[in-house]
Amino acid sequence: MIPKSVLKSLIKRRLDDARALLNNRRYSSAIYLSGYAVELALKLRICRIMKFTNGFPETLAEFTLYYSDTSKTLLRGTIKELRDIRHHNLTVLLRYSGEQLSIESNFLTEWNYIKKWNPEIRYIYDIIKKQRSVEFIKNVRVVVKELL
Image 1: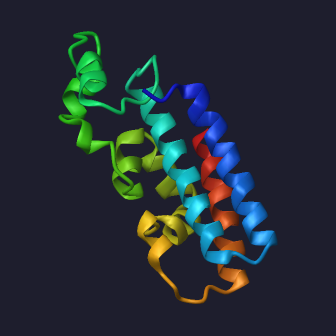
Image 2: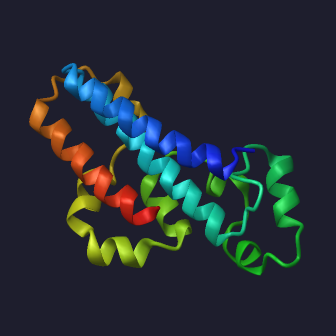
Image 3: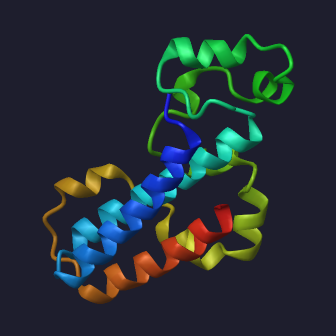
């Protein structure tokens, strides 16, 4: 279980780490870590909307504990398996976060810029220009602020 307080702290840390990497011209790594900040913010929103009071489930047992709670009707009607939310696909996580309409209506430009992020970027050796990294982090900060 990842406690919600830890998720919130990790979001800030990943954004701080991304800024440090950006300042040290490690542009692809800055994008990589800032993308995790979005993922964590979405998972925090999932905790809120699905009433995951103890935090984000990391194991099947933790998920089953939430799922077996008959008062969690939204969860039972929305998410069927842990793998539905335990991944890195930002678009799918947004759908489960309850913020899809808000983000896509009010922050579509920013969302379109970051939605294709995935952790596989760590294997890309392409040279990423500073401006792309700056724009990515800027858009991440806007979306994360809205999610929090």
